[in-house]
Image (tube, rainbow, N blue to C red):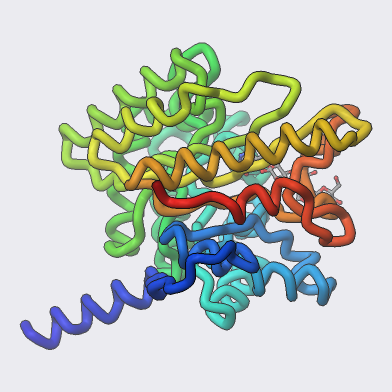
Length: 348
Ligand code: G3I
């Protein structure tokens, strides 16, 4: 029994690297030092092509961050592009690099309506995969991926974006074919595959959209009432300075952490309509600083992850016409005002 307990403690330690105590009172030199000072993991999404091919990108990533998320490499279409044929290269590279550089990992993401492999969506559409088979496939996917990285992932985004902007449960192949219980199933399977990983519900626009917030709170209350193993709430934090800052965010985060969850800001970025001006960069810096402060001041928010740290590799220009410059460093990896604004955040 004692050996079992020691084993469990060792595994728990292996999952979440502790943050060393911080002694100094000066402004931190970088985000890694800030992370120690705030006792909040500072993370970035990782572009695996850049990780493999760009030494400067890799160097800054490993110097600055204490947490990483694969931007695309752990998604279903990446890891199982053909049925039963797994390609782990990208995901493995992120995990190995993290282990070498004392970074925790967020697994992203197990159940989503996007970036599903074509064989799966086509099979559901043509009826060759029926509801019973789909549930089996989902279980297999979760057990396989979570099992592969058991003990190496601090937190998993188990379900992603399951509520739409109108506050309805999102229509997806999961809801349509399996009914609402797919959510509880997914958490239970993930817990079975890695009992120490923190299991999250992750979503965008939760920072301000009341309809979405209420539905999500109710889903979580229902899961907790059924003793489903859910541990965390992920606020993606995709903001734009052309919209007002979501000033109610601290209260919203509190509503979730009051349910006994830990919180994380999982995909922070702040885009702008181009061209860039000093005024826009100053507003962007303010938004980033307020988001991190919301996390720090909450007391149960443990991670602040940016969705890419450099404008050289950002999803924003490809998705929003005429917008960009959403990250804390520019294309040359030079810090922008937002980076310095993050360094100035303090615990109250
Ligand atoms: O892999 C193909 C490549 O073979 C092809 O040459 C290239 C040409 O466009 O496309 C590549 O796929 C792209 C993929 O990223 C991998 O780079 C897709 O076109 C592109 O649409 C896809 O975008 C990703 C997006 O999720 C898709 O849903 C973004 O990089 C990624 O940042 C974004 O991340 C999401 C989070 O997972 C969930 N929350 C929102 C966030 C932003 O949309």
